[in-house]
Image (cartoon, rainbow over all chains, first blue to last red; front, side, top):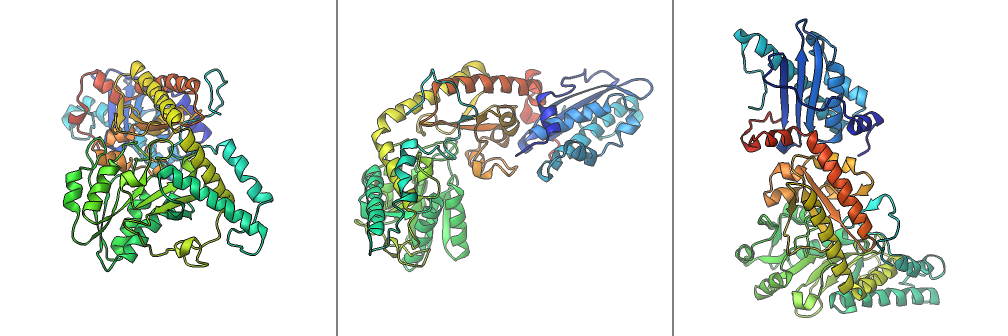
Length: 138
Length: 412
């Protein structure tokens, strides 16, 4: 498998690795994937009162493309409004990282992780709507 | 010829000797004249070019026969183990079809055996695929129970290419003989690593490949027993009737000469090389275990190939680890299936769980591996595993006391 320079860069120098306090009301956590499938992504966002993502962190178990996809996602999330973050599509990640067809699922997982993190944040803030969308691993 | 600890380390470091080996320079030296000066066709009976080529081919046949305790007439040249496995299995199946149509193999065989068996199933044969235990062993009572009146062939590998587990070939050979069933073994991984003797092992057909034993690619052989019993095969390649009609095609003389020399070297250096390989392998394995928590060795820690170490690093995905240690050439699962995203079918069949299968790396050392390379690899792998674990949500959860098997994952 040959990797694009951008995948290699994110793999070698991943941005925003780490964890936020998942019990913090301003933090949304999304965990997607499964160990038996070979990839699990945890993506977390911290959102301010204006609905802006002020911090994003990730931890990923998976191939280099999965690590790069989640690292890129945190870069894009930081500073954006959550409504804009909802618009991020996996195809943009594919394009940015030049992912080959066999690695497209990594970008899909990153998009799912973004949506899951936002859903978790929204669930914390709209208790009336507490639905089953959140995909925390508890 | 082997590397020494004080040699500078040549990068990248090669630790994928179960995929292929470097051609030994002594082998290359023996081969070279057969490209440029001794270039005759071994089947040419009318001139010295042909006679010289034939003499070289027969000398190589003697060497390969000696390596496995056979006679020269029992060695058929092929293009490698894939062809040898095809010829042995399809050749026996077609030849003995009137006697029976049932064959036995096991789930951890190489694809060259498994896919050949699948092909025969489409032709109306039936095949029993024996399961393996968590160490990769077939159960001999299950083998006995699988043998039927119409069983014509048992095909079980001498040593597994992914995990290195050794099958008890001599015992299997005895069982086959008792029941009057032919026994083929794919011994591709074995030469120079474990002792081979077709008599004491009771083997009727054996596949070998030159490039796994420091010889060239594109040449191999099939041992076909001529006495007690005399095994007959239906040719899979028709043509000029080379190799007593069992495998037509102009002989690859330089390749065959190389395989002969490789066999001689494997035989002569066997005792010292096996010890050296096992010591290096243990150094690698103990080094990894000393520095990292949760290192899982796949396969049988005792009855296995001396040069191979298949190890899982839980919470780290194998492909990302390989990417991080790019100056060390290793395999994730089998090199033959690395292009797919599915974890290794061999590891899955051990029941180690898909997660450990996804986290596995195969290190296979060789004649040219040095202690310095092993020490470098240990340090490099440990540092990368630590880096990736720090990035792994699974590792974090385990540190927090979460039982990963109880988590409800979003399987995609």
